[in-house]
Image 1 (cartoon, rainbow over the protein chains, first blue to last red):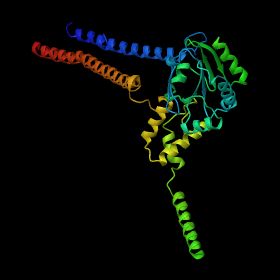
Image 2: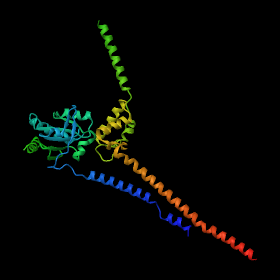
Image 3: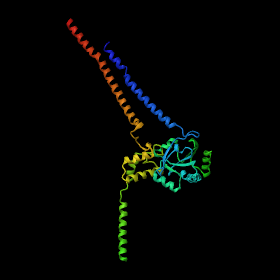
Length: 185
Length: 155
């Protein structure tokens, strides 16, 4: 009878510590996957909601922070030099900017999405863009806005709320002016 | 005076020609060298496409960037760090060893160790049970010996 006892103990299988450790590991792994899925499935920026904050260092070395731009309508345009539709709307954005350049309550900001500095600067010179532009380093801003591609434009009102999202290029200066005016009201 | 001017022009022409030859002979990284770095990076725009096989114009530009940086004497690590700083960690084939990324390295290792532990445990248990199953056989032999000894005594 005594000889059977160890054998029964053996048949009980893995020790509770080992089981607990395995379950903890599995639980941790599942939590990690869940967090990743939550992040991946988080929806895009929504009109009417506060716009994600951003900080952009322009190609001129100027730092723009969305918090410091409160009280102004922000036209945040994502573009890239390798994107043909971006080139189509570049002139419309610049012409619209020229209408507001002397006003203190509107600012246009260009964000170069995954672009080399050389190509981006060449693009800006080619399209004679004069409003502030900078690279989206580590794609932090585009991730915050969860952009789906370029060009995309986000219009933020004076209180920091999104008032308009344009997926794709603007097709006229009037279209740009219209959304800025709507945000100003 | 005219003669000296001609000589000066000829010398200048020869020197200019030599400079051009020297410039042409400067080592330019080959496609293979560029691709050796590019295959360690992923297209920042396309999903899961290594940079060396990515067919888009943007990727061609990025490969040219790699060529320029190699020509400027940058190391592979410096180029990869530059791409990560510009376009994010997702451009790297291997996540950098920091923060949450450590999980990508530690979880497989932990699972492997767990697997080894389970296998060792199973083998050990099986060996123990085998040796315990063999015990009654030894006892039977011993019993047979005792029986035969008893029989001899009885005789």
